Length: 199
Image 1: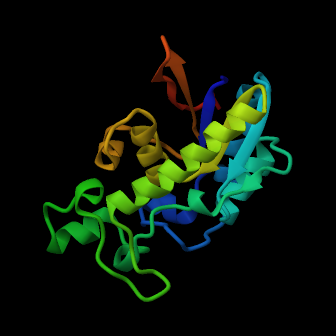
Image 2 (image 1 turned 30 degrees about the vertical axis):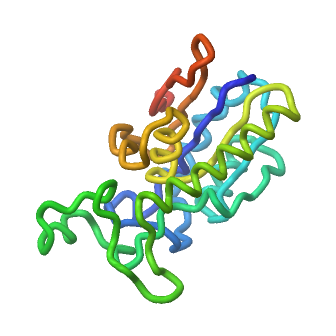
């Protein structure tokens, strides 16, 4: 079985300012596009057997810029639904909830089209994605690449390692970065994390 590569999309205006960007379809900045382009040599150095991408434009454009051709759009790869915290920064939330922490406390409900997700619900989506990744490894040779979003990929990493969703808090993940999940002696490991090529 090959390695699982995780790519967080490049910078957006909202990620730069720290606003929670769940279901809002925010485009990449020019810096975000450049972040993606710098990942190309890292991606091209591996044989890619399958690729999956979030439905949102910031992830789809990142996938295109790193050279993935016709990746499968997977709705489960979307970012955490932040509900009532969509577009709000952690600093703003903590003015009224000083001890609030996303990975343990989740979010407050939002409107019907933004109801919000608990950490456990995000973990369930991550488990479904990992099941599809496992099927892709069975059907192809080479690595599998996921292009998606920071908080979701952190939860997915925790689930891949057999940890609860809340342990995604342990894995800081910047925009325009590459991570590699592999195995050692048949057990899942982090082989590389938060890799950003030099400018």
